[in-house]
Length: 172
Image 1 (cartoon, one colour):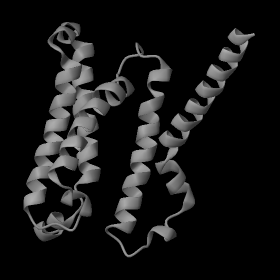
Image 2: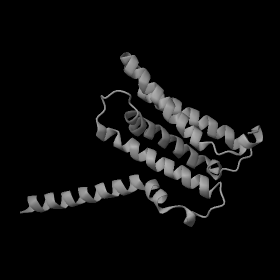
Image 3: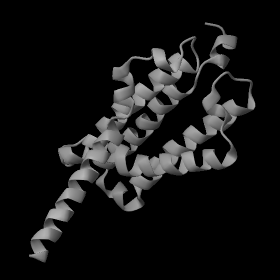
Image 4: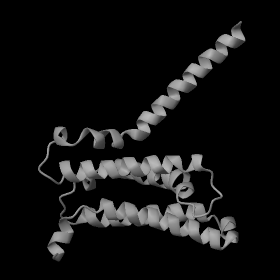
């Protein structure tokens, strides 16, 4: 593999792995040294992971590349970095917490994010970097990429039904 081939490769699979690894390292540091929680390690870990991600994306944008995900405008990239920070703090940090102190229900969003993220990367690699059209990507991969949306929509429907039933019960 030459350096010319590495320049054209999509950075997002490796970047997302590094993003999760940085947050996992900060969570592991907090387990080893509990006083680090007072310093704000969850915030700093998510900030460091987002900063690393942003630094690499901005550096790769300046060089010629074939990845359409690197061509977002300034406002979209700022929103992406803000959301990466929030997701790192609220979803990834509890999901990769190395001790059993986190209940399983707080790990489910990370599992859904991992499944959807891997499916989206698969779609991105086969459609944006390959010769395939979107219609040729397997339905299972599309379903997996939208799994968090389906789960949240189902939860919203159940909450709405419960609210209506509660209101009807109170109105009697």
